[in-house]
Length: 131
Length: 118
Image 1 (cartoon, one colour):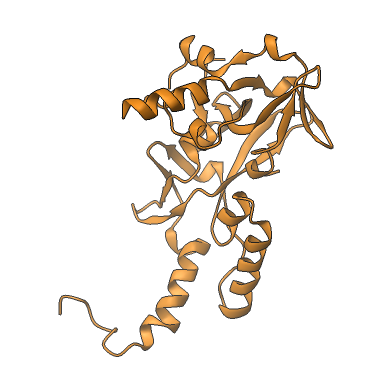
Image 2: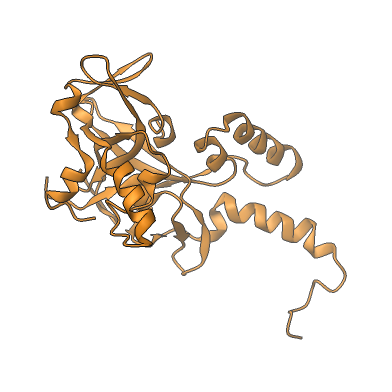
């Protein structure tokens, strides 16, 4: 055994995700594991996004409800958590860097929905804070 | 399968003695090469113990040093955990069964003490 060793819960879960432009884009909520025909398990993807954290923490009904609620109330927002293939992960350190753009992730989709449908309707919200 | 389906699963040894629950998974980066990431992360072993929070504080594996009282308490909890190779785990309806008996399993503190980088 010569490769780098990591403990998944200690070193990967809940780490900050950083997109290819250095923007924060959620946390690692779960890991997808794929099994080969020989029975070896590999990490195939990182899971991040709506409901995934609740699902991991045992609130499976709450996680499912959150996804269904997002699907019902936030038109245009994908209610499923993001699956980030390991080939799109460039580094795992104190944060996890990915080679995707923040805008394609479900976490930012919910944020954009709130910006367009809630914040955008508040008078004075259409200019920069320092103007 | 997702990692959350492995975490918290009860584990018994070959004699049926309850060892605890899966509190972490040790990954080794020696799998097939993935363009952009490097070698894939292989599931090498599971950490089995009784301390959920204590085992995640990093006092044994993460190099956390203080405060000293927490360090002592957490190190006791985490150090008692077992490291069970994934190849020695059988899945049953009730959870996981290790192929070895409790006395033959490696304790987490021994794995770290044997030179494993925290």
